[in-house]
Each structure stands twice: as structure tokens, then as C-alpha cells.
Image (cartoon, rainbow, N blue to C red; front, side, top):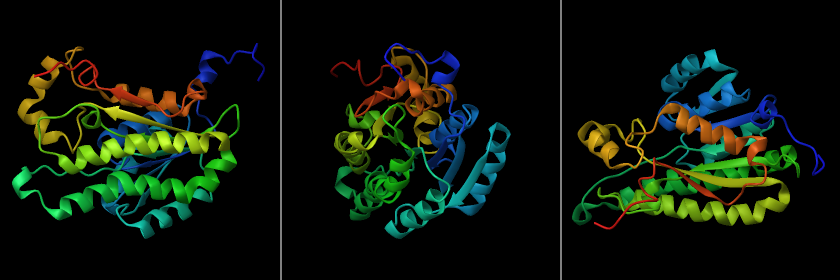
Length: 265
């Protein structure tokens, strides 16, 4: 495309012919993203640990497009490799590293396993999947339309939350930096790497918090509400589409302004 040519609005966000993998795509933010990519025309593979949960999510998402579900425990390196082997044969344009783990416990009793469990899923598995799927991403990316890696971070890596989530916040801060490191390395290989930092969205991970103080969180947000499905679907489609072909190494908070406008306490 020359500098004087313009993509139509419809084509700018069209993902027809693209293939995507969304880890943790069976519920919450992952399902929001999977639905958005499907509605934009992509073929989507979703993954999570439990086979029955995968099957039910596939059934629910099938009305939006071509979706496949593959159970995998991404806290294990061998399982990341297995998933990558199953996916890359079909080609891959978009990798969404969304699978995540949270552990809340006071400082005095915070256990060793809270670090290993959370870091394995939140930080190591995105790295392992990029490693394993990089050949497929390289094959699909071009200078005009790179392949995409979208990491799901958190606003807990931007501001300090009130809950004692030491390993979670640390893992997401590390994932944000890993996003920048990979963006610099993979840009010349026609692969962009960006991160989304969600705020409070209805999800399994946030359910207890939102049940207890969801109204208070919404009241403190500059936009005075919690996140909705379309808010997350929209940013994922943007980052996966031609609209974001020149965007890499960014961390995009999608939080109604909670973290980016926070004042001191």
C-alpha cells in the first residue's frame, strides 16, 4: 500500500481470513476477546484447563463464528508446546495471552506456591507460547500487516491496588516489560507485541471483589462504571486489525481511567 492509499473503514477492522489463539478464552475477559475476534471475522481457538469448560464455551461462542476449543494446562511448559503444535499447523496471525492466575493473602502468610503458581501462568506461559508459536507468526506477518501478540496485563501493574496480591501485581508488571522487550525484538520480524491492562471487568477472577465493593469501584472511576464486554472486545479487535498495524510496545489501560488518573491516598 502506498502512502497515498487509504483502507476503507470496514476493511480497517476486518479480521476475515485471520486465525487467532486466545488462552483462557472460555470465560471472563478471554471470552469477551474471543467473541470480538469472531465477530470481526477471525477463526478462533480458545483454551483453558478443563475439557468440559472448553466444550461449553465453544458451544456458546459458535453462534459468532468458527471457533475451536483445546484443553491445556498452560502453567506447564510441555502443555504450552503441545497447544502450540496443535495450533500452528493451521497457521496463526494473532496470539492473545490471556490465561491468568490470582492469589490474595496477607503478607505474613503469603506462601511460596503463590509465587510459583501465579508466575508460571501469568508470565512464563506467555513467553513459552511466543517461543513456540513464533515461526507461525513470522510466516503470517508482513510489513504492512504484521502478526500480532496481545498480552493481557493489569492495572495492578500500573497503580497499587488495596488487596494483597503480591505475586499477581508483580507478574503483570513483568509481563508489561516483557511486552516492550519482545516488541523491540520482533518488530523487524513483522510481529507486533502490545498489552492491554484491564481494570474491573465482570470475570471469575474479579467476582468476589465486585460482589463486595463493585459499586464503590464504579463510583470512584472517572467514567463511573465497570468494564463491559464490548469495551474489551473493541480494544482487542483494534490491536488485531489493520488499524493497529503501526502500534507496538504499548500498554493500553482499559479501566475507565481508574489507574491513569489515580490521586494519592
